[in-house]
Image (cartoon, rainbow, N blue to C red; front, side):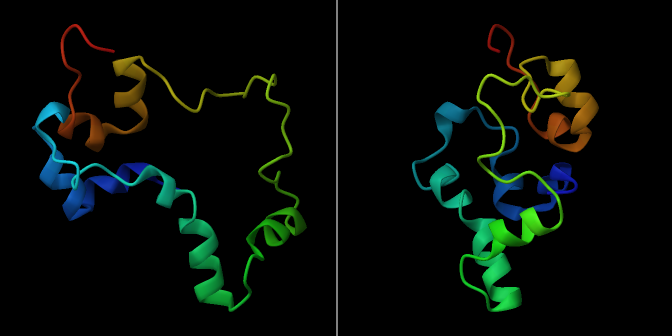
Length: 104
């Protein structure tokens, strides 16, 4: 989480690099829904406390999942369709997955 650009080291990510998404098989696409549970499962494995991540985050004074109003603008955008911004934030991933001309 601290450095998303380290995903460039993950073998499954490296296998996708340089290939158009249209050529990825169904099995190669990341399971986005499962990624929603990674932090919770890691917390439980490390601490032995089931479903305790949210309480731990709040105890540290960090905002929880439901703390922001959907209309609030983040201080810094979480996502950007700007290839230059993506490259600034994630240089290794940007090098592996360059923008496709004519596509955002």
